[in-house]
Length: 263
Length: 157
Image (cartoon, rainbow over all chains, first blue to last red):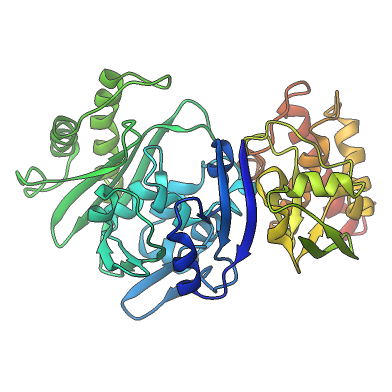
């Protein structure tokens, strides 16, 4: 059971940061996962009064505040037009609309959860995180760092031309994914982000140039096998490591073909 | 701590603990339509509107609604009565326990998308679980209601 002794709506990021240095204190995201844990929190720090709940589009970037909800991501026309709806595809099966109206991007990325569709898609989009004290860090690097007491303020995505597609496999809509997969091609280099293995998402780049000669079913399948061979998979109640490894190749192939709109 | 917010159009001032959940506070204020179901953000039984958006009150700290507008089914009686008749007509409320949450979320959908396709209905309501009537009756009830509203607008009924 989660207990909270004191609730503070932060008036500044610095105040939130100072409060968060105490181990017993905690920054609140959407609270869905946190609520399932057993812990005693001294001070729950709410960032919802700091204007971090907007997606700002500039000439070259999308800046996504940490308190932006998954529903906002799903419904943002410009962001989804730019990424061929990969972001909307990634979040649309996360529980229900009510859940997505409060679950936050910051909570999902900061938690670096293995099952995170959000981490998977933003890795493929080459996103960067901006932390209050550490500054800007590539998401790929941030995903591997242990959780610390800094505050994830926003996510930044460059609006570079990109082919991208998202695929996931679930036993049923709204369930946790068995495997998540996002594929993108930036400046001619293909990469695949695969999560829910059940480990957290990781990126694999096409360092052997398997797709350099063009994308078709065969080259996409070879890239899928290559990605599956580069990653480690584990077993849990949703699927075995062997099963995940098998479907990884298939999802990567489908994602590559979808990104190129190859039927 | 003191909490002030608007509940179904009325100003409320009450005292809550830092870890009080919105679900418990609403029930203590007499909103019995807000049900405790899974308590793991999955079933949709505890759906209420915060600033007109459907949320799961079992996973929202009451403190977070300070200064905001909260609506429960008790505050949507007229809108809900119309729709509820169509759900009942299709036999889509057996035990009725999930109904308040379903109706809240369906009303949110009608407001956001007055002409949803079948796929959009299934997608929007995927966070509302029912364990006895099943979903076919709910779908028929929603589609009948939408057809009725359209006919009403055209002056056909």
